Length: 353
Length: 284
Image (cartoon, rainbow over all chains, first blue to last red; front, side):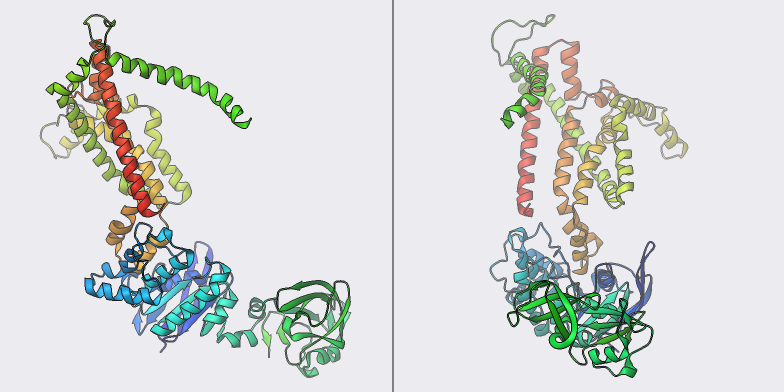
């Protein structure tokens, strides 16, 4: 039995089906990341686990105990809100110790735990500050400390980095993982940012339209996507998807032999009818005897250069190291896919393995 | 150039203000330092502090001040207690329903004070609606005298000025971030603790603003105390009216008005200072 077991959670808002019978397992001390586009139901799920929303049906157990019978205030689940939701009329210390004071914890114990948690989030000396005087990063640490001090069985973090500037995000990311791992806290984090998900999660759950599209270790869902949605959601620039209809691409007859040669797949593995061919931009490389295309646009993003080109009647992106070869718009180019790097998806988007 | 245009545009309003506010206020101040001669509105020349000395030395005036303050205080408190749950209810509605309820709340004010007072008159009479109902259900055996008592005046004031509290309260409740309340819940606070530690402290500016508005309206109220008090309940408004319009003692009623203007200005100053301190603490 898993630490947190979620079975068949259904939640509708008026006519919108937000969660459609969702199952999820979280192992103890894991950081699980719920990833998905906005409106996929990930925040709703988080609020249901916290008890801030009631599901229409389904069951949840935490550490073997039925969660749905327990009111929010008794669940002992820490929640870090996207906009921190600090108490504006209290200072840093009052904010952090709130959860202990309402539990009537003794003064000495509060003092000790406050000191510990302040040290952990590196906010010593800020006790008497007003929360409005703090920077975004500091406010975020207060929110984290406030949830940590109650020694939660489970931590829920709703897009904890989305209100920080890009520079700060990387360091905060590392810090949150360090703290959670140090304390051995089981955590569920919601994000729409794939980099955050991949770097912070022990396990990533990709959600779409109230259902789980795929779950697994970050590298599994990136390198072994189950469906077109997962393949397209992860990776920047996005994976190239080429539609093949009865051996034709945009009216250009390619045939199984050519497809086999380009993808490195056995001719027998290539299906008839309509299917999709997916190849990530980093697995496309220039090759003299490759597929001919035309460069439409070149963007240098730093170490890498994204070459947008027209290939077999579709737009395609190739990602190469900057500076190696000069690419310029309007030029012809010949490219090849790295062998074994192509995914095939059937017409419904399911992976053909 | 731009600011000159703005000045010209302001001119009509400015003239109006000077004409109907500043000049009369000046006369009011001047009159309050003049002596009263019974039977005429004309005062002899000269400056006198007599009116103001009377105001602070005559025990009758003190009874008027205390009654005015007592009625205003009780009414404000009752309004606050009644408005809070109502405002919580309204603030939790969806935008459209909220608008509907807010309109309902303000509707009597649009009707004018006289109509409301007449309504209360019919309700609170010796054998009026309220007494009839209370007698019929056997809650009382003798009709209660409402008219001409402080209770009657307070009932009227509570109904008349309730909207002034509901609006600022609702607005300050709406400003509270839902997540802040949810955060308190996840941290272990039950509904009562959330209210006493989070919701109520965060609405204090609204409570203060509403209370000041209502309190001042009660202090200066005239229609309600004069009709529901039936001349038996002398408060600032009715007394100033009596002195000005019936006794024709304009100097006294002027000094009376100045005294209350200063009182109200002081009260609002104190409250605004307290509010600013509150806001600073909240970091607004």
